[in-house]
Every structure is written in C-alpha cells, then in structure tokens.
Image (cartoon, rainbow, N blue to C red):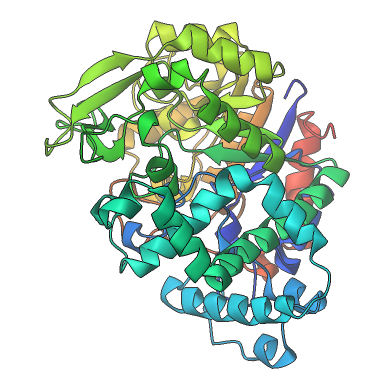
Length: 500
C-alpha cells in the first residue's frame, strides 16, 4: 500500500444476487468490473467465516476462524459446473433484492448444497477435492467434527457435550468419524466449493489489478471449533469454561465499558508454541486476501481482561501481551507485513510504537473528525501522514448521510462547513467527505459503497451492541450505473489515486 490508491468497502452479503444474499456469482464479478472501470485499487470485505443466527448473523461471531461461509456459494456457478440439477436452480423463492432475509436464505442454501453434494457423489474423479481436504486438514478435520457433533448434541455449547466428546477422547471421535462418514463428507464438500469459488473470484480481481483487503477479528467465539480443538490457547477453568472474557474499559461513550464475552488468549501457552496457532491463522488468511485488517489491533499489545462472572466491563484490568516476541515471530514469517492496524479509539504509546516499528498503516475515520473544536484533532486530514487508511466511516458507523441527518450536532455541522469552506446539503455530504479523504496525503482511502451511493440511515450495516436487524443491506444491480462510475472515476483520477 505504498502508492496512492482508493477502494470500496462492500461485504459479500451486500452483493447483487437473485438468491437472497450476496454470493460469489455474477453479481460479484460485475462489482469487480465496476471497481476496474473506476480505477479502484482495493476491494475491502468483512470476515467471510460462517455466521450463526443466534448471534444475529454477525461476521464477527463465528464457529470457526478458518472455514468459509457456505451461504456465499453461488448456485449458478454450481449449475454451470454440473453440480446442481436444473429443477433446483429454477425453483427460487421470492427474496428481497435490497436486504438479506436470513430466515429464508439459510434453508434455501442448505437445500442447494444438499442437492449439489448428491450430484458431486456421482462424479468418478474427486482428485481436486481430496487434495483440498489434505492441504487443509490442519483446520478442516476439527471444524467438520465440531459441526457434526454440535448437531448430534442438539446445538449445545461444546462445553456441555458428553464428557468424552468435550474432552476430545480419541475413541469417541473415531466413533463419530465411522458413524457419520457421509455427513462429514458433505461438510467438507461445502468448504471445498466455497474455497474453489472464492479463489476464482480473487484471481479475477488480481488479474484486473485489484487487491482484496480481508478482515480478522482479534478474538474468536467461545462456542467454536477453534476453542474446542485448542483449549490450551485460552484461559479456561477445569471444566473448560472461560475464566476471563474480553472487552474494553469504561470511556466517554460507555460508563460500564463493553463486555464482548469472547475468551481471552493464554499468551504464555501461545508463546511456548512459538505462536503457531496465530501464525497459521494469518498464513491461511493471506492465501485468501492480499492485505488483512486486524480488528482491535491494540488487543495484540495489551488487552482488557474481565472475570467471566462480571456483568459489565468495569472490573477488568489491562494485561500485557508478549509483544516483542509475538511481532518478531510475525515479521520473520511475513516480512512484508501486509496488515492494517485498526487503531481507533484511545491508543496508548506502546500500541503506536509497535505500529510504527513495523510500518503498519493505521486508520482514520472522517465521521469522528468534527466532534470538537480542535485544529490538532488526529482525524482532520491536515494532520495525517502517508501511512494511514482513511474512511468516511466503517461497517460500525452510520452512513455519512445518516450521520449528518440524525447524529451530527449543530456544532459539528458548523465545524464541518467551516472546514469545507461552504455549507453542504444532506445529499452532498458523503461525496464532500470522500473528496476530503481523496485530497489527503494518506496513501489509501476506502469508502463504504453506501457513501458512494449517498444513502441514508436505512442503508446502515451494523449498530454495535445490538444483535437484531444488522448485516442486511444489499446493493442492487441498477445502482452500479454508468453515471456513478464516471463520477467516481473522475474523482479518483483528479486526486492521483488511479495508479493500478
């Protein structure tokens, strides 16, 4: 990310598709063409791991840090590859085109994958599938067992499974493997297809000079294959339940802090194994993406640890990570360090020192820049240096227009108008913020697709600390108009960011 460039933030779920949710089909390729036509350098997405309904289908709460979300598999590509019967591909429920309806999408995609697996079983040669299973066995075998056992146990959290399964006794796991061979192969097949379709889409992007920015949540869910298969990597009690959970301390925005509930890492044990789990995770993701944004980067330097029995994050404490050993191990394996540090909020000097030492780009959010009358505010563009990625907002913020209409105070608007040198309307605000970002010296700027479309609060992707109604917004094919492409291309060229 050493040349001036720009890109678009749009998650897979938001892509156009006739199947109720964005996928790796024609809508994805058309979006890549839009990026190419407008000379964008980057496509940023959110985590692509499996989501679960109980956590509101959040991409940041998954049962696996390595597996892919089967909902993203394209039925039309399955049909083109003779892995889906014609009757199934034609029998499409009525879906909304502008939002994800997970209650309909999930059973429909399960039906699609079942039919596709039956077609796959009839094939004589399965060499590519077998190679995939062998190359990915280090995570795939545990993930498949987790999915199958969880279903057998009626969806219970893994710590409540039968003791021999909870404790991964060899004889119990072998029994599952022998008795559920077909179910195991079906889950493996879904992962094989997911990664095959994704790799083809990534190849298409890269051939057009577009790099994909992926996203890694720093923590994993407790009820996941990752914790079940590697309990030594987390601070758990004798019953393998969390002793401590993650969060952030009280601040200006919350008097009780944020209690996320994820198990915290046992860094002493990770260090004894030379951080092999983390290095495998990063290596796996760098096969999927060109660049990785590390969410809550400060938690890799020091993290807020809260006793598991607490109801708020107030009674937590900061715990240091063996940062020098950890980052030296990362640097040794990945000397180019293709990472973005999500360093938003209150950042201490030790976090900044690590970011600067390894030349990792940080983040700046323009929606945060006008909350106080301070010309030295770190989010105002005249205070940036080159090594930043600038956003109008992220998936956790309102759209720029939604912020302007519903959240920005009159004082913030006045400061914004003074900074721009004129008053602007609600319809103009997102593009004026985009212009500020484009003008800045920051090497990279990324805009949510909703801001490029100048959409309001109705298009917001997520409201933090809520579990309902999020991750639903979708782009339609018609919105990728030639006039919009011309407008974005013009701004990209004017400010020297068309450098593919």
